[in-house]
Length: 288
Image (cartoon, rainbow, N blue to C red; front, side, top):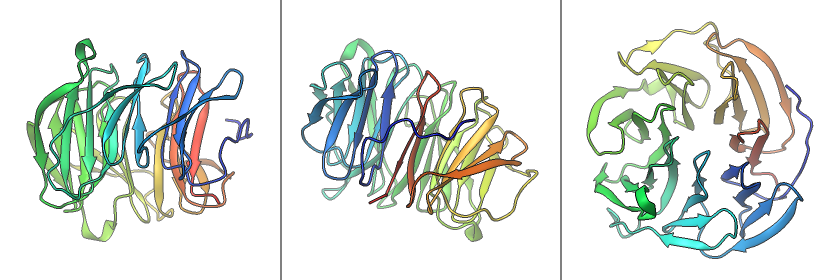
């Protein structure tokens, strides 16, 4: 795959990126302000008001995207206007929402907080109503969220060194998966394209777990490869891209996990990797 840089839109920290090809829009925060861009003309559409400092997500065919920070907001892809501020009761007065995910069909949203809260919303009929009571992990930071491509399971990585698993769009918790203490801090998680495997990026390696059995899978390459801060699968589902804390992106075959190639287009930690539906790769980092 080509590693040529087509466009550079920010020169500061970009914690999260959301892309919509049908609307030809891209949204991100560069550490100081959030902005919405037209990806056809490469022009700034508008700057987005309010908090947008943690994470953003959308579904392929949705005409909206959601961002989180001190709250949760639904934005219009076309205009950048606020559609709705999502209601939720935080588990702690100090809690900030740090991660958010949208199911592939755009029917429900889940967000996780730095104090251990998980919150669901239903998007049916554009009501964005709270789907179920919040679930709390009692002051355990939610480190990552991943929704399976088939939309049937949610995995939350929490500070208690376990992967918490939930049935689709509900707080019905399924058996969790314990992590090994020597794996270290969880930096990123992503589902495999077939929804059967959860991939976890740690401080020094990538590991895999079978979602049906909860057992860790052995791979062709289990060597220490550096801290993996962001991951994404290619649209063809045959490659896993992993972004490191030194600004490098490595490309691995799937499911063998053999290194195909690597490149470095950033000078600091990769914070986001996103493929748009048209196959373009977008990356965010802590470059200054």
